[in-house]
Image (cartoon, rainbow, N blue to C red):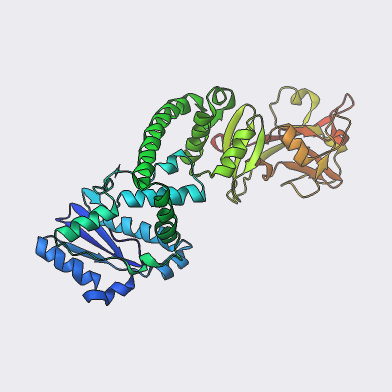
Length: 394
């Protein structure tokens, strides 16, 4: 029943069950300190006592996390380190009501509206159906001592503002607001479980070679379609937010959506796939040959052009700003960006060494085309060719 503070105490029952109590540093001097309070309670009950203290504000800042998120992570990491069969937390019905309002205010979907689950893996919440008022009333009636976090009255924290102000106003609307909010949470959980089971089967049907087949994806209702997209990116280590999910969903006919500095959703060729530009450049190795027309006709190559129309030396490089080409037979000049879009070149490959140039400019793109200036004609005698050397062919 203790809210998240700067430090916390955890009690383990014979290394099998862990109960946690959070507190702030004021408790170190308040009423003998919460550590002593919990330690003496453990001794009285004959259970093992384990203590972990952290300076959450400083450590969270170094980790680039909020104090609440960092404290939660450290708390559960500590629980797991004790090797317990079950971890029991003191979350209650009032916490669930606060969590729902908090998430709705910040923006959430049906999954987020499920709030604090009664059971999650080896974590159990035995008090989740009891309000904080009922817990305190029981303790008072039965002479059970407890502590209240001194920061609970400070409305500078979002959850305290919800608890002390917003929920008090809701009580004026309906005194049963807490029960009603929890009833909604239970309904959300039931609906979410059903939709998750349906989307799981649909996901398997739409998945092909680590891409989602858009035609199959579109046959499902919007709610299922979006869940499939979320699960696909989750499987690829990306947690989509609502903004990116909606953008991807609205552009299933074809687009490229940047999710982060390195992550993209690419819809092209009838499939939706995840692409990652992790800063590593793809470098291809090529085998160069100069052939006559008769030799060339029986060769399988990735690029060819009229060798005698090349000016100076040939270099193979990455794309540069302002690069353009006049694709043979097209009668127009195109930027490489437009050309790559036309041919649906994967964005991971666009920064690789696939641009071929001589001293006068670009003469071709490996696997796509050659420039009008160096195209093979009836007058061609020698053909310059490139063949990509695959790793398994060396």
